[in-house]
Image (tube, one colour):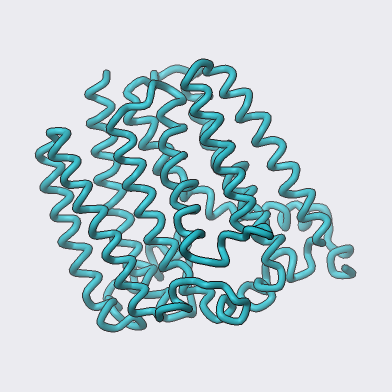
Length: 332
């Protein structure tokens, strides 16, 4: 408490901003951009650019920021072990200040989301608002007792996939057009991709999870088997993606996706064989190229996941944006 009182105004604002974890906001942006592109209905006008800006704000600083703030508040004891430098365990913010933080962000998100839904109107407005409210509800129960979905990976990973990969895609599409049938497929692929990535992201907090009784997949089945489960999900995502592209008659995209799958498997094999040091030839990409964006880790298994993530995310984004652009052109 004493340390908190000594903080100046600027430092206090920085602590509140850190509680919202800005680096995580970008995680929803690819789905938002893909949903807008696939609509084929956004125009190059001030009006549509303002709507696009509002979309990114409501899902980034407000939506994801809310979930991150709530997570830090309810994970105080766990963060004392895993991340003691975070604003609350470090004493830069009190628990009461943290409540004010996520409460204000939540209220703002509800009002802005409701206004956008009313402004769009009709079925599209209802879809947009419903998607946002679903994400806000899951953002709370993910971390808050009594449900605290994050305690068990069987609930936490689907919750993350739903909020970061599925409803974001649908809401972005609904902002500018009726829901395109192909967008439901892309949203589903992003759901499962997010599930796989969150499974592996738990490597970084394995020790704290074990001590805190959190049932992450790593704690339950070990790092090597966790990689195997995640890799199977990811490879199936790419395989289904190729099938959908073939059904949509995007023939060139089919071949690009299959090549991407082959590259992914090439990176997965050494990581599965050695979960600690596998694919170490990719480490420079993490240290020099993408470290600031995706983070760095002292946990060897998590570091291996980051090396894989550099390749996988780039490949998936390229294919996703290509598909979204082709769908959007179809509906122009």
